[in-house]
Amino acid sequence: MKLWGGRFTKPTNELVDEYTSSIGFDQKLAQQDVKGSLAHVDMLAKCKIITDEDATVISKGLNIVSEKIQNKEAELSVDHEDIHMNIEKLLIEEVGAVGGKLHTGRSRNDQVALDMRLFLRESIVMLTELLVGVKEALVEQAEKHIDTLLPGYTHLQRAQPVRFAHHLLAYVFMFQRDVDRLMDSYKRVNQLPLGAGALAGTTFPIDRDYVANRLHFDGVCENSLDAVSDRDFVVEFLSNSSLISMHLSRLCEELVQWSSSEFNFIELDDAFSTGSSMMPQKKNPDVAELIRGKTGRIYGNLMSMLTTLKGLPLAYNKDMQEDKEGMFDTVDTLKGALSLFAPMISSMQVNKENMYKAVQQDFSNATDLADYLVQRDIPFREAHSIVGQIVLYCIKQNKFLLQLTLDEFQQFSDSINEDIYESLKPESVVNARNVKGATSEDRVREQLDYAYFYIDSNKSWIQNHG
Ligand code: ARG
Image (tube, rainbow, N blue to C red; front, side, top):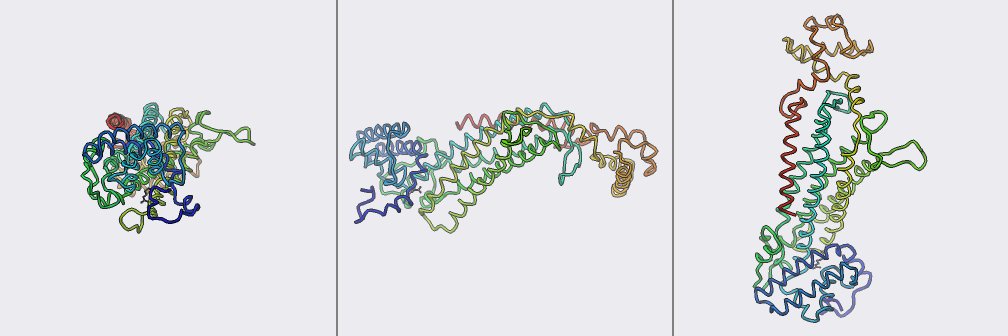
């Protein structure tokens, strides 16, 4: 007999049970479900809706059921559709009919929204911590590579030299925004939907604030219809996760390129690379590739949730049961990626010399030659054209700028003097960029200080929310 079987004269078709049940995946919410029920039953007694004795029996029973589920001693069945009804059924088996009082003043609609929020707020803290770990790994490498220069690229063409620390710090700031977004979203997740009932509230004199306090929520959802219909917090999480994943993927792409023989800028540690079953010489950046690849499913989960919610009328609709698998998958996928990413970054070897060679063998100091002419009162547009001709000359002569004689330079402009050689050295080129956020040593150190400051404040947030 179904918990809701009263008004039915026939059993459901077994394919319907299979199709509509969510127990296959929402059993992941068992601990959250019990936690919410314990707070609910406690409140029911406090508000004299049930007796203290009944509440004690129900709470004890819930703890036993919870333990049995954890130890895989309880049978969870599609016959009882989802984790909420399975737990209620197990509770009644454990403590008898009094277990049936647990669901007083509550609906699965507000219950499932509660479980989702409890699960997600834990996941957000866990992922934030992992993300801060990634930032720390990047910042440590950056600290070691302030004096490591490499070409900076635009259009994947060598553009201007930068410090490797500067390049890594760019990602630190992306991940910083990701951390900010996760922390900010936590506030919206951490509102109590329980008490909304099926949609309109409940006739019992419940105390929502009491439950909110007991479960450490920041407040209660203000509107009961919204409370049971809202999955914005899931969409927001999936969207934030998509950005994190996109950032990871972009850096992974760089790691893949940099570790190729063509670049040879870094070597990933053996522990974070894999071999080929056929080609004995191969060492593949599989981890980086797979993190890049799994971005697809994380975006997919976002699109799937957005699409499910589109056009749903108020309030709860069964469509919303589709909110779970994508969310679980995104949490697991990101957890896997972030856990591997930090040690992969920490253990990578940086081929400083090869990066430097690349900086010397390019025209990434051409802007500096133009700026040099501008400082000698030649309008930038004219300077740009002169340097363009010099570069063309160099290409024909198979030389780089620093290999030209002063005579050769002066064929193009008599404003060029001996001091040009100092100005065009990679070290001078990076240090000449000394505006806030730029690649000079001082400015990169300033960025590092910022990054450390944020890491510290993130850690105290994690501590307060753990
Ligand atoms: N298993 C359902 C879900 O995950 C729980 C809520 C069901 N409510 C209902 N009225 N059918 O969405």
